[in-house]
Image (tube, rainbow, N blue to C red; front, side, top):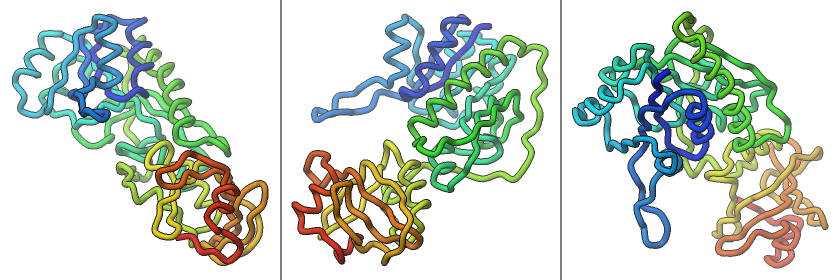
Length: 304
């Protein structure tokens, strides 16, 4: 099928690669170049870099709604279907109506749970034991469209948002290719169940909340990778937590119970959390025990 692809980050590149191997990709639409690095040089998105390297036609519109130039180019490409994967912009009705078979969206959640831009992160933060990936027909509403395919899976105990999102994407690619093969004969089914929303993370979501239980703290840590990451404050300085694990025991929330070779044991609302590797502000990553010894952190020290 003639496919148009809408996507932006590196997570979306393997989706485009798979489509490009099996179908003629007639247009790639991605976010505009963004300033990066010390010189704030405009830098193409990962999807744009791949598409340009493959010689695929690329558009980078600032906005879609009311953008006549974009709409004419989209129509001229004459896609039979469009696929979105982490594109990052709302699709207006006039764009949704261009491909005869509409838009398919690869969404890493069991819709209608975790509609929105950060489904994997929030599933982890909220301690879900199961998640999945859905291939949805896009409507004007936010992730409200009917479903062509769904795959369910258990969330592995050590999986963070990076690993889980990549695993869901890779399975989603398989589903997407299957749906495209049979698309003219498939009828999507409406979403069923209680809907929930997964908004973009804010920096504050990464703050370690020692008043919560150790399992909840660990789940949040897994969910906020790679951004904003976990952090706490000691003496007004931010300290990133790169690795941690929950442990049994009891202590005062936020108060250090012990420092040993393995790390720093801190009380929580329920259980203990062991800090294994940290990165103080302006420093390199280091074992949590080394940081504690170098900063006068010991039993009774309060972390915020």
